[in-house]
Every structure is written in C-alpha cells, then in structure tokens.
Length: 327
Image (cartoon, rainbow, N blue to C red; front, side, top):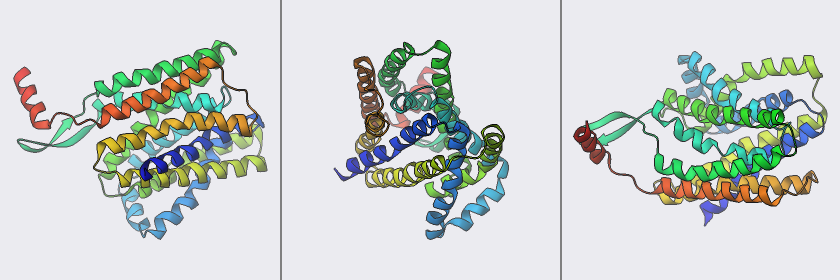
C-alpha cells in the first residue's frame, strides 16, 4: 500500500500545476510569465538536491560533451511541453487541462517506433526498433473517449476557435514531453540519474525561458507579486514534491511490472484533484454530468492501460523467431 499512497500524494501535488496556472490566468497574469518563472525557480531547487547527492560535476561534464543535443531536446521536452500547457490554461479550467493532458499516454505509445531498445535474444544483446504497443494503445482509446466527452461539453460553452486553442497546444505538449525526455535518456545512456537529467534539461532550456520572459516583459510588463509566488509554488509542488514522491513510489516497486502499473495508474487522479481544487480554491463551477463521465473514462482508461502494459510480453527470442518465420 505504501507505493500506492506515495503515487496518490504525487498526483495530488502534480494537480497544483493545473490549478495554479488557471489561478494565474484568471488574475490576469501572462501565460508567458507562468511558463518561464517555474523553470527559473526550479534551477536552485534542483541544484540543492543534485549537489547534496554530489552529482553536479558529472552532470556538467556530460552537458559540456554534447551541448547541442542538450539544447535541442531540452527545448522540445520542456519548452514545447510546458509553454503550451500554460497557454491552454487561458481557454479551459484546470481539470479539463489535466484530463486532456493524459493523452500523452497515447502520444508516448505512438512514438515508440522512433526509438531502439537493447534486448536479450538467442543471438545476444541486440538493438531492436520499438513496436507500437497495440494492446495498451487499445485501452488508451478509453482515455481518448473521455477527453472527447469533456471537450465536447466544454465546446458547447465557447467557440470552436477557443476549443482548438485549448486542445491543439495540449496535443503538441503531449508529444513533445515524451519525445524530449526519451531523446535525452538516449543521449545520457544511463550515465546520469533522473535528478541530474532533469536539472540538466532545466538549465539547457533556460535560453528559451529567457526569450519568453523578455517577450513577456515587453508585452505585459513585470509579473505581479502573486504570480511570482504562485509560480514558485508550482516549481516546488510539481517540480520537487511530486517528482520526489513519484520516484520514491516507482523505486519501491521496480522489478514488479504489475505494481509499477498500479503506481502509474494513480496519476490519473490528477484530474479529480484538479477538479476539487478549482471548486474549493477558485470557487469554480461544478463539472456537469457529461464532464464527470469523461473524467471517469479517463481514469478507467489510465488504469486499464497500466494493467495491460504490466502484463508480461512474449520473450524477445520468440519474437525474433516469429519475425524470421514471417519474413
């Protein structure tokens, strides 16, 4: 039960991202500041963690060896991920953004063929191109149905253009986040731990956030004090607390795919925490019955995807034999 409890707490803190972004938008704060300030605050927080683990020097050497890779994929994984999420906050409540964001499960599955993984076969360790996990992808269609229901209900209240401005940036973010992170994992090739990689990507993405903040200053002036502390809270709650809890939960169950799938499924609770937070903190409107149905479908789809993904696959030896037979 401990890993599940940690996963639930992680989902709770991750939900603050969507609640606070919506709060900043409703108070008139620029989404440009909401996006850039979070990463400015994350640098010192992550520095403290990495330095306390005596892992800063290896990280800096790794970044120095391949600076262009760090700059490009950090921009994709962090810049094209978080800026669109903050932009979408202007066109939909936090619970809708949180629910729609979970299509990243589908996006991540569709990206699998673009990567290679090392597998043990009858001929030794070989690099094999990934295949789309159709079994998990079929379960993910339940998530897509839930998102469609939520967005359909929301679209009845706003124009088609506003609906697209909410959905399209989230689709971009859903592909950018797994793409950038997986590419950086390839670049690091196991030489860095998760904390080092996140700090390195945060530092490498700073040029983008600096450009965004300059544009924010010229168009809307400096951020309000409220937006500054709210952005710091997002960095602390999501960038540190939620990440620490989620890493701790996955560490407790590593090697057990069924338990790992259960921990991953807890993250679907973000949409419920975001809905509750908006109602309590922002006095937001209670979601309609259709929206609640969509949320439940998103959670069900996340649970089904995690369950199916945790079931053991055929051995790679069997797969290679079958490919030879059919090829």
